Image (cartoon, rainbow, N blue to C red; front, side):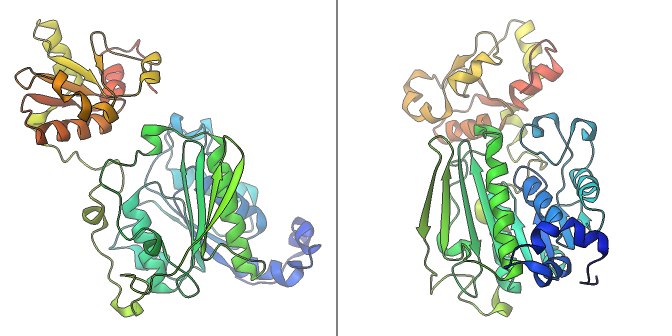
Length: 384
């Protein structure tokens, strides 16, 4: 793509041209630049929008999902008219409407060890808008291997993090987190929620860091972790050190191997995988409904948080939040059949695994959780 600017582009980017640190040369750099945005969701939405508006010439989008109504509270690149569409196509359409002069290649697939090198190679930097640990580690490792800056962002409820992992000049993600957290110890936004504006703030900060890197101006977050707390509107910065013994960034590029990151983290990289639990420890909403109708109802244990009961609940289900389960084992009888439920079946699956390890054999997970019950058994119940 030519780095020369047309008359229309000179007008479009006039506010950039007035900034001495950007100017005409800087805008040409942006037009010639390329950025890969991994994830067209909460973080990828604002990041991609502002990169497109700024005139970054090539913005690649990686995502495997479709637009769902629950996305619209925070994923502002999509709209109601896009429900059911592929996220990459919905996002691409919005970016080209915002700026028709850019190129937006899309990759409707998960980023994996098998395709990461092919997808990332050729881009100047990566914006990490992922929401799971396997893909974060993969993004880090492939960026280190290729020598490409990785602009990292993370969000949960009211808190966010931003950094730039550029292993040539500073630490990488593995220097900060050499090992993933134990499976199930860190809830996802789908389980714990997120304030809708938070990804807008963090994703915009990621876009800002990316633009500074492309322009070669200012001081980046290399070697620093920016923490944002929305409840008290506070920013904190932590200095990060490069680990001389890092298992990735201390190695020559040719020795860096892209591993099985799902096995490394002990969790799937996305929620479209088949359940790993044995079928004998699962029960569908229809099967549970049939048992209840026949008068053979098992003991129902709801492992959600108390405030979720105000949204929806199953009659006769007892509340034992997942975090309280270990301390309340004496209240449970291993000889009694139990069905564990939550919102979508994820937390309850972890509860069943915990109970099985504790010697409970008559315990099952409600597949799909109370949302699946609402969709398949009780259409008057809300889905959230």
